[in-house]
View 1 (cartoon, helix red, strand yellow):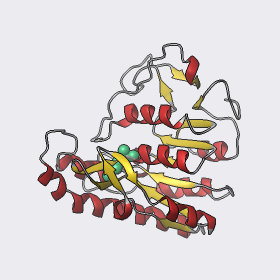
View 2: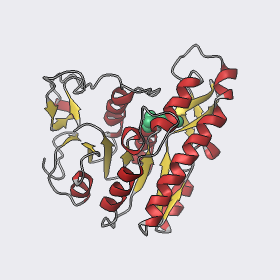
View 3: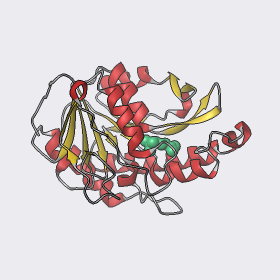
Length: 266
Ligand code: IP8
């Protein structure tokens, strides 16, 4: 499950700040769930502001400048992950943070090495793994941003996940950006091989987002759908929706399946 950075942090706010109230409420919704779960945090204000400051949104940024940004981005993501971990632990959940930076290598932003074995061992020990988007060394660019969406896709594949839940600040996927387009149509179900020319988009994020916001999420969804039964994009800002999804109940969202495989109905 991905917790979108725009929900768990105040994304436009400098210096970055965790939205503790939202995180506590999200954690309460997770508490009744007893199956295996990995939680992936987006970067939000903590990741994206520092990443933009050091030029990670610009392909022309010199390698040395990217590398100079590593400590600031790392520090911010550690703060975010630690604060979220504390909320999980305060609710009695056995959460541990597995930080990508220390054991991930990228090549042209693609994962080459990732701490999968540690995540698997933590899950086997009944721990609740929290990992997060991060800055990581990249064999080609020096360093690059590993998006939480890329991690979700990788884990869905490697852990043979059944389901992926992507919590965002909108109700799912639309035919145009719901934040700027008043006529945007919500798409409740996408059956990928038969998507019939839908233009999936939600436009660029209003706050700094070096990994491409909803556009990147849609690409991740298409990739992840190769490996899981169902992907759900839903509004994590609306109380109760996560709880309903975890309980396999109906709620407002976009469900993405391949070839008509729908687990539970919209
Ligand atoms: O918000 C980005 O993760 P995302 C992580 O999931 C950083 O794209 C460090 C900006």
